[in-house]
Figure 1: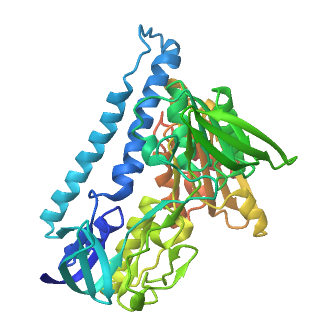
Figure 2: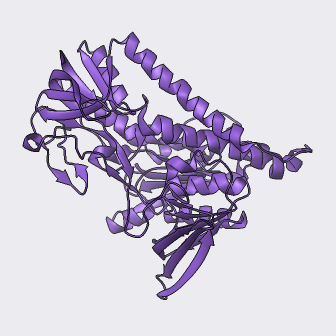
Figure 3: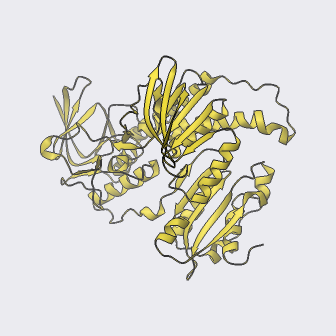
Length: 467
């Protein structure tokens, strides 16, 4: 059995793993990256990238079938070819996966195909499909970036056919007539948008009071209103008790938490999107298994686990389960293990994005959180209906809402719903990082006409200089 020695072995090639491997290699370290699946992990192959491709197709189709007359354009056909739409999303993912392979070669990262098993600190065994060791990797450090998988709840276990996860939802052979989505986080909301635009009758089930429950309430309720107008049925404050699948579809048993009354609804498919749990099982020998908390690996500020020399980053260590968080955590882990910096992750600066239309984007504290913390604050808001660029592109739905500290005027939070707000968010993340005030944002020249003018105008509203 072959043996190789490296400075770092990274387990997992998702947005945390591959970025960490390249970053370490650029620091002059010898690096191996072990993964049994496609380069790029879930995000690139079965998550972020293919879903955004499907969302783009859904948005374009909606524009052609519903919005085109507003532009003075008549579209003669409203047909679509679902198999080609799915194929395009797979093609985009395959292209990006190939580019990671090129990055590895360019930076001299050794890509090892197989299943990793940490037999002891500093030793990673690579197993084939039958579980037989094929080679041994000796290393000074190990970085676990194995991501997460869909969480399973009693009575809601997916079967991959009629009760599905987001992975199956990306490659269905045909559009279902009726789709029930359990869970109204970003994944559930994005798939509701995709399938409803292609003609599926969609029902969203959510236990909490609003869809996108971690977002500012005003943003969530606005999106609910828009979705309902488009024919998406939303059942908030409802618990899903049981799913019964048959050849004819799925029966969904619900309980209304407001009055404790039960009901049953029918669907062709049910998408279960109720969160994730870390992939750490069968990875560690009993003698070197790190501390596990709530199905995720526990780490310190340097991302080292309870086992010296073994680090972890990304979804496997818990929320927020976001690709850009995994990337930054993994890079910091590399820098800390090789003592090239002492920086720490700032979880107050995490951008949150949901890519339906209108898009949702946020950073920092919500109004509810400000109240719970007892902070004195003021709010500035600007509607896209008063923004020239938004009107020009026929996307007036939504607003920019900025929250500032009352005493010093510092940016506490930004919450947006509207056209391209996921791209606009970077300005506000940077503003919060640099502790910008409402006056500084308000007096910064924003090009006209642009959607970003809504940020400037919202700051002005909070500063008492609004129009």
